[in-house]
Image (cartoon, rainbow, N blue to C red):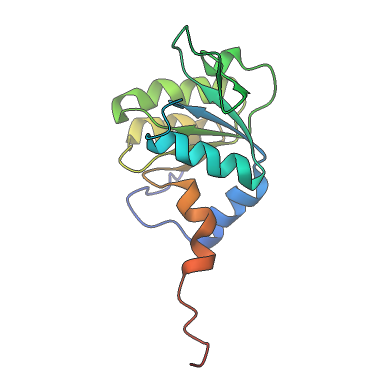
Length: 152
């Protein structure tokens, strides 16, 4: 099997295809803390129309932004299209295995999160993989990319 090189930039088409196709996103490492980057990404993706499923094992945490929090990917009671990961790179392989087991289609790790073994696990499980990128940024990239063909 030919694996993708996740150190090279992803094509705009590849990222756009993923962000257009997925509807349900489980966010591993979601935080109720409004100052955390994961909270802001969850908020924007949710407000953009994605069905967001926060995943955080903290027992006292029941909801974030009115969304039910699940302790693990395997506890989620509905299909998940994409698993978005806000955890350390060394945690990613185990999360990739769980994502394969629940039948997710995409494993997406946040900026700074990169693990080759996790990519192989996900790709062997038939998943698309994006690493070290932010879906919130990619979602809005077409709006802020310079339009070089336009006159002044």
